Image (cartoon, one colour):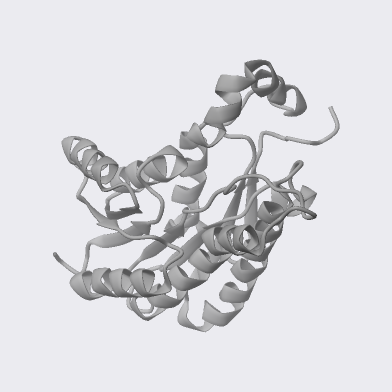
Length: 253
């Protein structure tokens, strides 16, 4: 592998937004390294990308496992000699719980899934990002970071607010190396993330678009296009920013 090739790691990339980001960056010319915890799905996704002419590989590890994250990202960095882009896409709601009934185990799981994972992966990638060209990190916050989430999603919103803060903190820390750090903040995107409510309460799911100025739910490709921009030379003077990809959600219509 030539060091001139661009290397992008995308965590949580076996489906939903993460896979579309991997596909978009692959078509942008990156060698894409997908992470996930479902190895069978990972293999299918690599086959699909390869059929589209994209150079891709899969590393299976849990982003909440500090040792696994560190060893795998280090292995990737050593294999290619650098990392150009890290997309901390992995994360999730983790379930719902009101604070009064919330167990410490659940609290720690959601924080680990969203905030710890971003820290672990970024820390491991930094030595190799320093060797990259126009290197950058893209994190995922959420509209929940502003509105604290819906019922039972308060700790999710809290974790995503932490991601927003660590994005700016990393940007400050890494600016001297020319490494940019930004975040995207998706609104309601039509992915398997919402599969349960879509199947059990389709009328509720359909009503969500009524609170979006553009009158429709977002698509994973629309997030991927923003990530593509943020890691490109066109965004060379952008760092410490959070781009809301919401279609104008929650603006009082």
